[in-house]
Image 1 (spheres, rainbow, N blue to C red):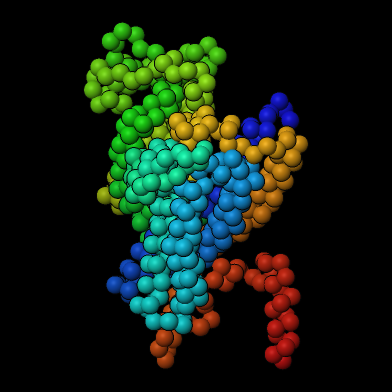
Image 2 (cartoon, one colour; image 1 turned 180 degrees about the vertical axis):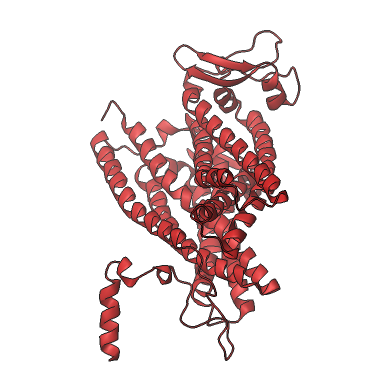
Length: 484
């Protein structure tokens, strides 16, 4: 198929499915914490704007959570179907870590999710807030275990190889491997930024259409505060992560910088743009800034790093791809910082909600957090190649012995199914966003209680008309007939 080998197709299939999957957990992580903040503000201030926003975003969270669960199941199966030799070799490490994720995180999320989504009018405010906090905590614990497993594959520690298989000898070293703290922070903050940009873009969309109300303004204000504070922090975390990667995966840093060789003791320039040519072993059309590479990579004006030519050709990552994926991530990160600073200037001038150029930028930046997250993920995973467990097992030795036709067919089926299923889910989620927050949703009952019984926090309660959902109108008519 197009000259691709079975290994290529297996990698493309895994990359395709994980690219879809990672979007939903990222929004789930950020949205769960956002909901906890909204409910906490509502309980502290009794400002109905926070309550309205909670009900609005909880519906979107529920749809997103469901798609994340469905897409995540596929990932687990692929370890056995397409990467069976990897599972046999390293399953004693990755298997327990993924099991811990299910036991400590997924069960926690699932256990309290029902209370969070359907318990507003059925439990007290304190218990409901506790349920929201537990769901938010569960998403972060889930990310912890997943990233512990993936980070071990990047910087393996705490193991021995016995009879051709990995045997863990120090679980603390396995979990808290050298890259784990930086990757956990980087991924978690990326999820918060992606959610803030999503929320901010939603508010900007309504404001550009003259739908101005306190809830919409609060959405934009909270999103921009998050962006202003967290985007610079993410840049610092990224720098720390880069220094750690330079120490443990120097070939990856050389590849994403497009750096092939040192010239005597000359300091490194920063290659802003160019085209790394793997065959010619050079970065063509390079646009450079003198000494800046040394300053960024080594925190000195004359430091050097290993060039790609110092690594055997079969051990080099594909510089052409990760050179550009890294720059997409960094470029979008700089735009996030710029948007946050712009929002601060407008806020001080009292024009945050009226400046249409700013609102348009906020709208267009809506998917930027997810795009940057995907670009960073590509940089990390492709930069690890040709290793599936860095320095221990090659990707070519991990793939199952399937033929090209089988993998090509399964990949085609995945593409069709994913675009249909998740396309419908994303379209419905965008419909909820377009509807906007409903004022006074969840108002207290006259006789007491947490909320009006007729406004449960479920996704389908936000649809404008029962006919908007296939089969809903028919079900409504049948219910009316049965009552009469």
